[in-house]
Length: 99
Image (cartoon, helix red, strand yellow):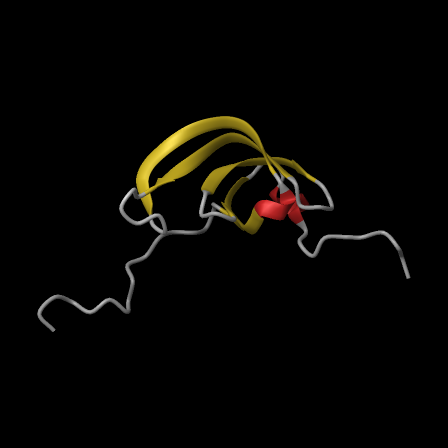
């Protein structure tokens, strides 16, 4: 048995491709994955942060902030997903007004 720790995720296929990263505390960024390590520290280039709604910190708004080259600490990473092939859809569980 190897004593070397390996990550559960195979992020090699996402190198130089767009990824969306959700971090603890509610921050959400997208950018091109340039590198990572076994602790899930991520290097993102051309990173953009989606700003949160001041009235409801659990919701993100359409406002963004350009960050450039960033490092996301592995202990703060909650989710990594590709940006290609994902689209936002309307919530099918929301009841229409007047129902």
